[in-house]
Image 1: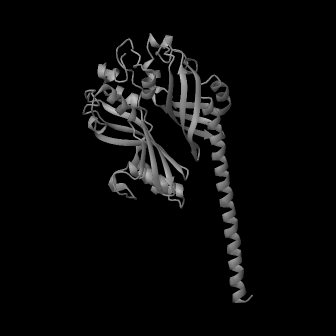
Image 2: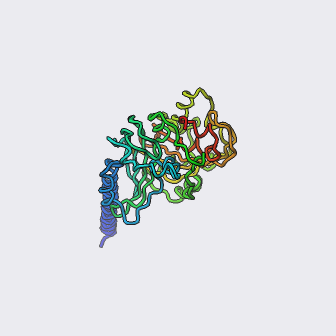
Image 3: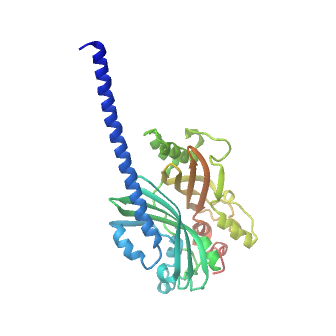
Amino acid sequence: MSKVKSVLTNVLRAGAIAGLCLCYSNIAGAEATAEETANKAVVTRLLEVKGTPDYRVVGREVFAADHQVLRNEFENLIYNADDPVLKPASERDSVAISERTNTIERIFADGDLVAAMISVEGKHTGNLYGIPATGKTFDITTTAIFRLEDGKITESWYMAEEGGLLMDLGVGLPKRVDGRANIPPAYDDVRTFDEALAEHMANPQDTLEWRQKRLLLSYKSLPENRPVTWEGRRPYQNLQRGGIDDIIARADVLGVEGSHGAAMSGRRDMVAYALSDGEQGLIAFRLTAVNSGPLFGIPPSGHDLHDWEIGFAEFDGETWTNAWWMADELGYTLIVGGQDGNQRSLNFWGQQ
């Protein structure tokens, strides 16, 4: 065989191998996309009936046998209603809320995770975790993250606009017998953004999603650990919602001034989830700090803060265009002083 023919043969053989590899890669990518599409369909089916009588029926079909609810939709109200008077009077939310509709505003998948945001409308016609029926309607946002395996939901994590719900209903937090707030526990389910970023950087991929997630994780990491930089304090262009917008709105009604940052010291954000799908992204994290200053009229308690916040991102390629944030605003106002029976904390959203 001549040298030229040998080279051509080797080139053709290499091209064939490369073609096979590319074909396999495309098939693998198609399978991943198909799985993510199927996962979104499962979650969509569940969210469309969330909080309605049909939820249990659908749940039996989409939940895995070992399904875990890591956080409830109305986490603070549920824990607060664990009370000898409030609990017996409480009805299931599917009973206490009638005419509920869920409009899916965002939904996307990343591997075995699906993230969603839904607008929830309904009418308060029963005892909702200790809140007697008001007959009023409400319109709030619920966020959710799910983990799936073999087409079944194994984990569910929710966070609803509970402070906004109380404002829509015109009521305060139901009063417990002990005169204090029962604060939900803080689970050891997070790590520093720096740790998550280091792990991400140790497994580089030439994908848009990998680079977007690098930016999301960099935002809350220490400046010296960030592999990417941006102009100004924030890497995104537009703010659609601030994390404590409901607290600020309520403070305006109460006529009190303050700020988020002034209420704390030693802040460190700890990440639980980071997702990206090419157009949308998400980080869910727990704010940790010490309550060293007043929070919109609520005096400082010195307690350790551990407040959830979730952020949805919109991307144009590698550019982070829009950011939408929501903290656990009811939980935040309660952990400052509600566990001590502080009336300004307990009555921030309305008189008990």
